[in-house]
Image (cartoon, rainbow, N blue to C red):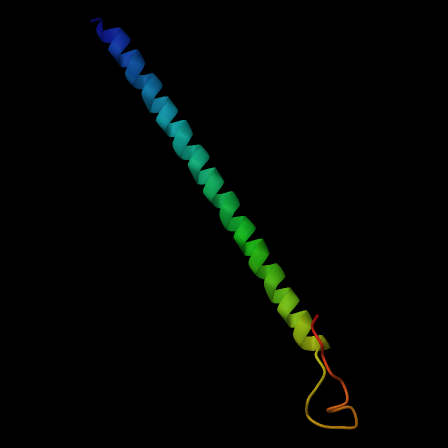
Length: 70
């Protein structure tokens, strides 16, 4: 077997491994970014729900509304 063919094969394998690792890192970064976006959206939704929820501290409207789920 020729030494140059072994070296060429090794270099090709190394290049493929490097490309695969780079792709995996990029995929992981995209996944983390998507999770961050989802977390921000969930927090915004919870904040909006809390802000629009009626106060139960008293007043004329307490006990007059009935929530019914169908």
